[in-house]
Image 1 (cartoon, helix red, strand yellow):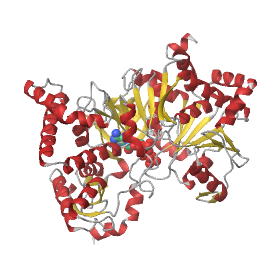
Image 2 (cartoon, protein in one colour):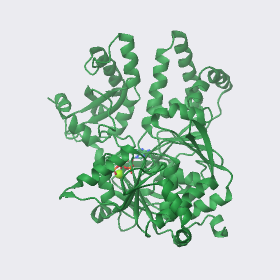
Image 3 (tube, helix red, strand yellow):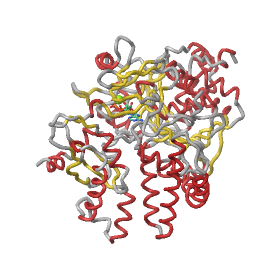
Length: 608
Ligand SMILES: Nc1ncnc2c1ncn2[C@@H]1O[C@H](COP(=O)(O)OP(=O)(O)OP(=O)(O)O)[C@@H](O)[C@H]1O
Ligand SMILES: [Mg+2]
């Protein structure tokens, strides 16, 4: 191993990975559920997969700079293939597993991918659909062409243009020249070479391809390693889509520091998988924490009067303890004593839901309500919020376990400069800021200025201690017809933490007052149905008692708002907003424009 590599000056992610694999060869690299049991795979085995796949790709004729897409759910193979593509000199194009045929087709075409990896019937069908129908663009339908479809698990069956990973690896194993070529290509990789083009979440419109270099990623993990977000030997837990920059960063981070990554089987088995793998670190998005929060509340409501009392008492004790800890003050002895009892009676059960070994949880991708952070912290579960964008590969700020403030996104990560423009927009500069948008010179010029500042489109401010607070997206700020500015994010977060409210969208741009569309939390809706004997066929969105409950919760929120911010009317949506209905991004953010258009009638009712 080169000494330069050991001192942290890697030139590429594959070079970093191979150096780490040589160092930690026999140690476990990941935990995965295979053939009905959890097993561990060591670094050496993972390295062999990466080398064989890379050689197989070269053997197939992949040239330096070729784009290869991965259209698959999160799995160990995803990470191996990503590294193999880069080791073969290629550029990885991630596509969300949940993307529709049209969305995947757009990314394949826009990125000029030569090949695509798929992980099963669903994704292969979507690719075939896109190949058959072409991709709809503004100027008409463009044909999509691919050299190959590669299948990530096992053998491919049927069509001539598909190849399974097993066969590809055999080819790689048998082709010495390809293996040597991989060595040469890895050695030739430099920090300014393209590693991947990552498409943004598509919250505000069509996704844009962000051009990220090897150096962007290396800078991110090198600069954050000292913060100890993930530590050597710890288990980090993976279920977030690797097509999102946040999960990808944690994946590379784990390789760099030597964590053991546990892969969930699926979202449906999340709770069993967490319990089985007992992670130390869990990265997740706010929607997941909101769901757990709602579930804990629903469980409390379903309990006896006595258990409810005990729960409420323990939560109160935990909140008091948390308040002292947040202020950095020592916890008074009498609270410490009560806290020990509360831990035994309640906290440990909640912690047990998360495997019992959690050191920290991380939240990013969208804002999380302070109430949720305080709720978890009461149970001695620390969630550290971070902030970033695909364009900044991706982190800009993060709270640290020994230096955090709820309600803020933390302090800038080392090496990253942040400044606030006169109108409040957050600008960022640093080695992790990507080069620009792929084939979009106009949008690139709008967001990257001549002084090297990237304009995030988010509004925020630093407090006196240097913690950044995000107000909202600049374009989402509401200007009422009275001329007042309202930040919907703050109000939506207050609404979402109410027990019966799952999601909320505040409306009011160019209107006299603010209103909200609200969806009911599924868990609390279920227990409401049980308590009132209402069948699943009967709708709740117009049920007078439900409306009364929500009305009271909206009134509760209104008390915390200035009068021009208050919600004058609301409507309950027929169902929770979902990704399947195209209302949420794969990172579970609300596509505001889609929802406002879909429920235009309900909105107009409130301004009638
Ligand atoms: N902790 C946070 N608090 C508030 N907002 C956040 C946080 N983390 C991320 N964000 C929001 O997410 C955005 C970055 O997300 P991402 O790059 O995944 O795509 P997107 O901006 O949601 O989608 P698109 O750019 O396609 O509209 C940021 O600009 C910011 O608005
Ligand atoms: Mg964006």
